Image (tube, rainbow, N blue to C red; front, top):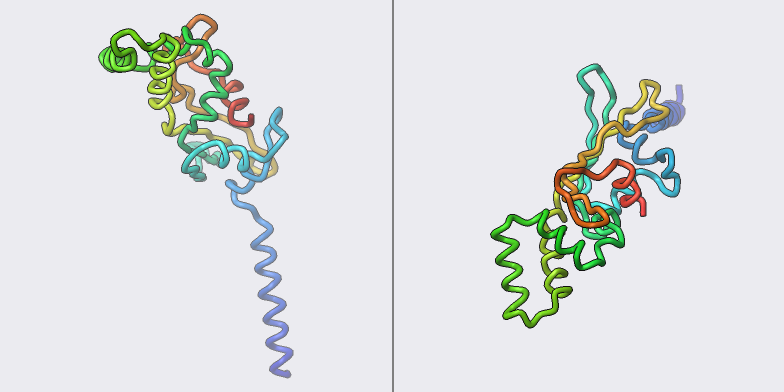
Length: 191
């Protein structure tokens, strides 16, 4: 047998193995390259990687053998403001959000420092308090999990940590006892 024929056959065989190996996607790739119902404007990976700081993707097997993909990333100020919405522009809402998010001594100290001797307008004081409250949430690690079907053809969101998003802003104030709904969080991520 000719040595060139042997090398060419080996090269073709090696390329076929590499191509076959490249055809199987990891579970992370399946989720990142896919879209979710109601959120088909971009891929999951593009939306989440752009919306969070320090994005991290992992995969693991669940207790019953489920194929789980987990995303963790720091909450960005832009996504948090999208979640809170236009209510965040109202001074009374900003103040109630700050009261819900900041411990009382910290709130009082910031309030006194921002208001000076009462010469600073309330709306400016509330904006300072609101920014301090937002900073309590910005950078917190948010977690999302998807389960990939056994055939690897689809996936679904099974978990997101609602508690790390801070106080729920309601039309007349902020309430720490309620959590944001999954849909509101996803809408903010994809906005």
